[in-house]
Amino acid sequence: MANQPLWNQLVFYFTHNGMYLLEQFGRHFLISFYGVLLAAIVGIPLGIYMANHFHLGDFIISIANVIQTVPSLAMLSIIMLWLGLGVNTVIVTIFLYSLLPILKNTYTGMKNVDPNTIDSAKGMGMTPFQMLYMVKLPLAMSVIMSGIRTAMVVAIGNTAIGAFVGAGGLGDLIIRGTNATDGAPLILAGALPTAIMAIVTDLVIGLLQKHFEPTGYYKTEE
Amino acid sequence: MKKIKKIFTLISIALLLFVSGCGWPGLGSTSKDTIKVASLSTTESMILAEIIMQLISHETDHNTEIVNNLGSGQLVHQALMNGDADIASANFTGNELITTLNHAPIKDEQKANRVVTKLYKKRFDQTWMPTYGFADTYNMLVTRETAKKYNLHKISDMKNIASRINIGADNIWINRPDDGYEPFAQTYDFKFKRVYPMQIGLVYSAVAAGKMSAVLGYSTDGRIKSYNLKILPDDKNFFPPYDTSMVVNNSLLRKYPELKPLLHRLDGKISVSTMQDMNYQVDNNLREPADVAKEFLNKHNYFRGDK
Image 1 (spheres, rainbow over the protein chains, first blue to last red):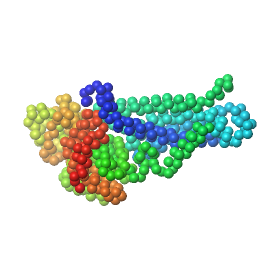
Image 2: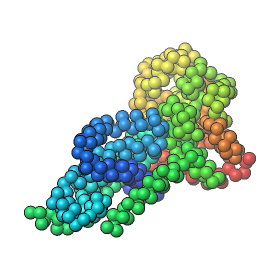
Image 3: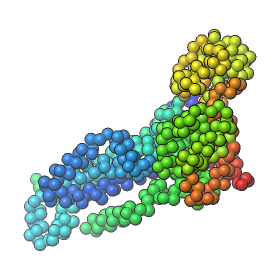
């Protein structure tokens, strides 16, 4: 096998280990997804709260900024000291990295809602909660989505590093490839699906984002 | 509005799942009952881990998971001690004796096994299982042609030609005080013309391509088979025994007593040539360790016949 062209080796690998690859693909996606989901659960409400308390907003965002500057391998190692080996460590790492884009976008999205719209909502006698989920959230949804989109793409990349702490996923293949004597097909078999996953996820969330864009809102503003 | 309500319900369901601690759906690893097997980043270790996992999940109801790609034996040991894993797939007597146990090297295979078993039980409350049946040790490798040309059958036979040939060896090995090149030269009473320090992964192709007359490689590497190399037996028992065994946390065996006879099924079942062949399947034929492990277990019907 080793003396055949790389492309043939890769095709051979895909045809013989398809199920395994699919399993790792799913695992990789789920790890990224859970990390971002957690970040969304924490980040969106926090972002909404911050938009109403401006002084707090800058403070929290600067903390999230600091978290973002830690290199991912270092972050993984630090969290490993606390959570040990395994998938939890990776999910928490992804969570921390996803927090900033989601927080920032929620904050920006909520703040950029036209004050006139809010005024008219108030004029109609809406309660604050009604205003939040009938006016502000729908208008900010597309910006929030773009934050989740960034977070998700970064997360898929970072999950690949998670293989270092034994979490599995496609990074597993990449590491194995770097250890083997002739590991080029293994590296590609891990790296290509990772790239494809990131691109497809980006496209899908992009569509979702378009879907949430309030119709006519920006046009009437002009 | 319904959309947003839906999203809220989804989020709260996810939150509930997380809080209730039933683990991550689809990842199946965080639940407490999963048996985790730690593996080094070597092919051999991964195949063995897969064999253990598939044996357990096929014969019992337990879930298993691999903690893969751990860089060193030390890391695997830490993982077992911290409870991040319960079973270590590949441990080598000679290696663990020196590194993990900080013990002086023991040349006698039986004695080394006894000492390691005893100390692991005493110090770490872990069971050092009987060996799988193969030892991973340094082997002097030559091509069939070289062996024929110089009439080589064992390492001692190299004495007459040693001063004329170059050999390649693992760069860690050369300077090892207890079993490195210096003591080797003393034991066998000859020195080579030159010993080239090399990456261990490169020595097999170097000797096959004729760049080196002989090399020192690992006995279970699949490439010994693919290049059809000849192993020269270590007739003076110089290289310490690196019998391969699995190590199991006793806490796991107390929790699930049925695992003990199950894991003992693997005792002495994997010969050097079987291991070489499985390594070869993965390294050379691009098959997944899981796939190779499954084939091995199926072939032997999960060793149901014994115990």
